[in-house]
Image (cartoon, rainbow, N blue to C red; front, top):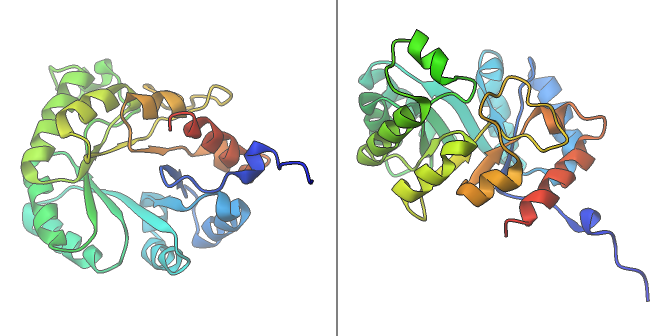
Length: 240
């Protein structure tokens, strides 16, 4: 009888793992997707690619059977946000972020209509500390502002929020079982924190209540991106 394959080689894409394509061009993004193969099935297309061929790439990824997170953090007057969300609703993409302001969130929800596009409210960017918020004119701590914006997101009809791993438990408790809680700022113990002020490991984030994690440079900047993705998936599997 042949020996069983090592556990890591049996792992495939964990649908809770989102890898950001934070590169300047669509060709670089395609190369990264090809390098990752079937170890990743969910990709984030952010502002850097939005400024070039982001939407074309998103449709291409959907054509390959991937899930796509449009992390564009829409923030404008309500009518503009509603029209933008309506335009994106027909793309087949899965997640769209908007800033966590009541008018913006409600407008995005109206715009997506009956489509399958999930609207996620950005609470507080994970790079911001309490001191940063004070400099911006907020009297609240990051946690207090996150809590207020979660309540507002629920009231607006959003499907979930983007929040740091340290606020994931709060989001889960307020939003309930089916509420999406997407956590950036996720860094395995073996990776540098870079510019994430409120980071946590993949396992910590999932145990705290995250439904999805965003993990970028530990995977995309690795010498072996597939191996790094499998290593992160192996840690995630411990959360069940």
